[in-house]
Each structure stands twice: as C-alpha cells, then as structure tokens.
Image (cartoon, rainbow over all chains, first blue to last red; front, side, top):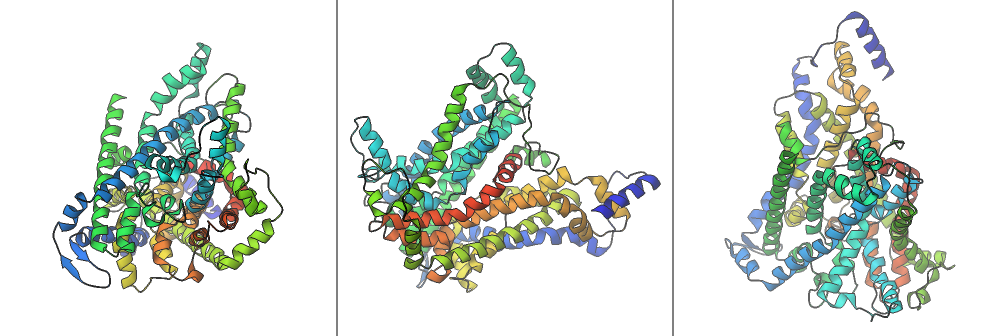
Length: 319
Length: 301
C-alpha cells in the first residue's frame, strides 16, 4: 500500500497518466482474470447450474434414490396438477407471502421515514436494534414464536384475553397458521428492509425535504408525496426479493410445532411449496415428483424476475 | 450490457470512503423530531428484541414459567442449570464447534474468492467480462432450494453425505459477494493506484493482493460477517445432508431439542438462546459496521 503510494508519486513526477490500464501482455497475464473468477464459476457449475438443469431431467422420471429410474415424460407434472396437496401448498405459500410482505414493507417504509430524520437522537441504536431479528436464526425464531402464539399459555392469547377476545389455536386453521408463520417472517425481515429503504432515502437530496418543510408540508405529506414516489424502484426491488424469499419458506412451517411434522399439521394447514418438495423428495423418496415441484418453483421465480424487469424498466421510463 | 445490469439491480451510490459510515449529520427530513416518532421507534425496538428476551426469560425461569398466566416476563435464576441440561440432552458443544468451523471457513474463503472475482470484474479488461458478470447477477435471483434433490445426488456421488464439506464447498460460491466486492472495488480502488502498479511492473496478482485487497478489506470484513451469519443460521441444506448427531450444526441440534418441546419447552428455549448468543456477542461489537455495510452495499443480498 505505502509502496504503491510511493510509486504513484514517482509516476506523477515523471509521466502523465495514461487513460486505460494496460497490463503486460504475457500469456499468464491474459489468463489471470479468468483464474480470479474461476473458483466461483467452477463451484457454481457443479453445485448451482448443473443441479438446476438436472432438476428438469429428474422431473421426467419416476426416480427412486435407492431403486429404479423410469422415464415417464411429463407424468410427474400431470400428477402434480391433479394433486390437491400441490394446490394447497401453492395457496399456503402465496397466502403467507401476502400476509407477511405487505404489512412488513409498509411498516419498513414508515420506520425508514422516521429514521431518516436529520436530528434524530440515538439513530445508531435504533438501527442496530432493528437488525437483531436478522441475526436470529429461523429455527430459534420458530421455536420462540410457537411459544408466544401457544394456544393455552401464549403471550398473544393472553393479550387477546385482556381485550375480551377468545383464545385462538393458531396452528389449527389455515388462516391462523398463515398469520403465525407470517409473524415470524415479518419479524425477521422488517428491520432489514427498513435499513434498505433508509439507504434509499439517504441517497435523496436533503434539500428536497428541507424545502418541503419550509413550505409547511407536514411529516405525513412529506412521506406521501416525497418519500414514496422517490423510493419506487427500491420498493419494487424489495417486493421481488420478498417474493423469492417467500417461495423458499421451509424452516418456519417445519419447526412451528413438534407434532406437525413434514405436513405442518394434519390438514396441511401451513405446508409451503418448499416443505412439500422436501416431503415428497426426502420424506417419501420420490425424487422425480419432488423435482417436478422444483421446476414449478423455478418457473414462478422466472416469472417474478421478468415482472421485476418489466416494472423497473417502466419506472425508469416514467422518471 | 452494463445498462442491462443497471436495470436488474437498482444501484445506490456506495460511499466513497471505506470507513464504516459515521452518520451523515445533516441528512434526511428537516424539522424537529416529534415525540411520537420516538414512541413508534421505541415500539419497533421492543418488538425486535422481545422474542430474544422472552427466550431468555423461559430459559432462565424453567418449566413453571411456560404455563403461567399471566405470562411471566422477568428472568429467573435457573439459566445455568437449563443450559447444562441442553448440553447433556444433545451434543450441543460439538454442534457449536461445527457451526463455528463451518461458518468461519465459508466466511473467510468466500470473502477472498469474491474479492478476487470482484477485482477481476472491476479492474481488469478481458473478453467476455460483461457477459460473465451478467451471468453472476442472474444467478442471484435463483433460489438454490428448488434444486436440492439433484444437489443431494451430486453430494452423494462425491461421497460427501454426512460430512461438513458438503456444507462448506457449495456455500463458497456467492454471487451476491462478487457483486458486492465489485461495487467496492470500483468505488474505492482508484485507477491511478492500479496504473501506478502497472507502470511499476506489478503483475495482476501483486495488484490484487498488494494494493486492491488492503483497500477493500473493511468491505470484505462486512461481507464475511453477513456470510457468517447466513451460514450459521442456515437450516435446510444441513438438515438434508447431515445424518450423525456429532456433525450437526447448532440449528439442527435445535430441531433435535425441539422434538421434545412438548415435554420441556424451557430446554428448547435455552437451546435457541444459546444458539443465538454467539452471534449476539459478535453483533454487539461489530453491529454498527454491519448496519452501514447492509445500507451501502444495500441492493441486495
């Protein structure tokens, strides 16, 4: 570092700086860039891209990991689309996604707006505290939330009792278990998303807010007419990332109760697509059928990414 | 091409200096801060911290606290007894060691790998660079979970089922990490510095290791922290590939503890608290850097 600085000053004295970086043209220097990126690409090919393509292949088979592999074309997909358990898992996944994402992002926006205040005290403390859920594992989160939402002795049911409402057995119904799992997801990610929005807000010119303040715009008006429009690209982005994260929800429904097992309850109340994939693949040893679920997940991810692309291009043009 | 990349990932200008962000003092909405703002932020803080606190309450008050109405909200005195029981019930110490080993290895090796690749993408010119970087970006949005079955087949072909390298090696490839390091390489390592080294006859490795890496070390450190947290907390993949209890990571040990949650909730809560404590301690010391790292590397991981 220091020798480099020394070199720099030497060069400044002797020669004018060139515009482009030219590296010695030896063979090894021409190969070097590829060597730097090779470790990533090798591992990615073996453990990322190849498995992805292989998923499509396996999904065309009746594939028993310790038995036979029989080619059945699109048989797995036909079976899947006739399988009520699949549609149930799809519905649960999107239900949980909707309940967890929309309030979460609104809350994050609101908190980011508050945190963006120029004269806020303890700003660092607030930011750090909001990131505590992010460092807590999903497994630990699931265990503690199961207790907080317990049907007999849970904190939430105690609060409901205080305002005169009857106890809720959250795990017993679809909506109840969606709310419970969404609560875990929201809790873990609202602070993280708050920080993303705050970063977006801080890249905006503060003169904008000052001018609005001087003009007598209330905090709410600043929020509604300045914050939200300016953050639109970031908002689109977090929605997409939440969707992709939502498609992967697995640990929460698996650990939400010790009795519920791989189906998240006898009625599959909260079995998500990822958990259904695991159940079929590793619980029932139907690798082909499980891979077909993986392919469907992939298609959903691609659709979501295309939507992202479309929306971000459009907002760009609108600006 | 780079236009395409810009559209895929909304960019926020990274702060030019590598130092952990000191709060920019006069930024953001103007006017005084109302008392209600503090009330709302205070509630958000309580919600953020309460589940962890509650874990500790039950883990220290024991089984009676689980069934008390109204719910008990202050800690008891039995924490060490319950903690000892956690270590007796499952091989929790081995699990902690496994998690430390796996998370630390992945964090360090992957940070260096990503710095190398980020350096190549930011500072070196070579045919195919933009296309290859676009591929990296595109891999960020495809969740690994959907191909767990073939991944498992590969791991078993390699004979790695029930080994720790089954978690370590696939975890090393981080598209987000490369994106992150490339951003920091382009904003904090000046071209003049690199040119100086070129004129001095340095080869690209000397440029990377001697010049570029020391400059971006703070960013690599934050990336390492984020990776460490992610690997420490990962559940699904270790759950699939690890079979022997003595190789379990803490998260899988938690699943074991939770299996008898109906019998002893305090035990599961104690385990959960102990599994989170190491990260909490780390976070206490470097949390500020993590916050500013997430904010300026932001978009996203």
